[in-house]
Every structure is written in C-alpha cells, then in structure tokens.
Image (cartoon, rainbow, N blue to C red; front, side, top):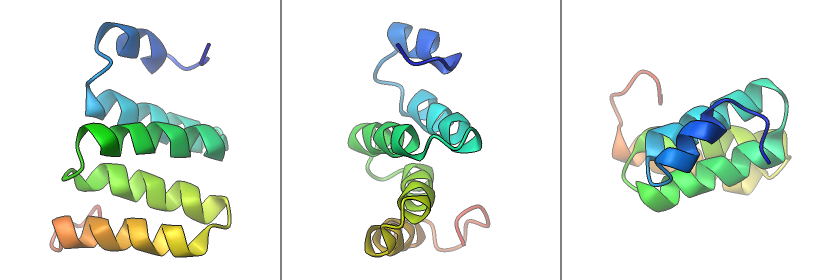
Length: 88
C-alpha cells in the first residue's frame, strides 16, 4: 500500500486525475521518483490534455535520467499550455 495521504482519496475516486497528480508531486517531494512517474502516467492516462500531468512526468523522467522522455513530456505540456507560467 502506498504510504501517502492521497492514497485514501484515490480509493474513493480512482479516476480523479488531480489526485494522481497530487500524489505524484508528493512522491517527488519524497524523492520517490519511480512512484512519481507511475502516478503521473496514471494522471496522463485519465486526462491526456491536462498539462500538469505531463510536467510531473517530465520531472520524474529527468530525475530518473530518462532525458529524452523528460523532454518529450515537457514538450507535450508546452504544446497544451504554451502560456501557462507553471509549464514554461
């Protein structure tokens, strides 16, 4: 079982992409980059046009030294939200 608080919320709302994104951010803050990547990928699967999921994936890929995937994820986020200051 995942130790983070959003896990309980995800049990109640497993299709809520924001919860997956939030848990990915919490994973990242703990340095759990593999878990952050898994959660961000779930977020993207649920909401492929939501840029923040791609940003979370980009950070996780970068931390895992998967630089080409990181660039691709960040590029997709920029395509979706070119003027969003949280993305660019």
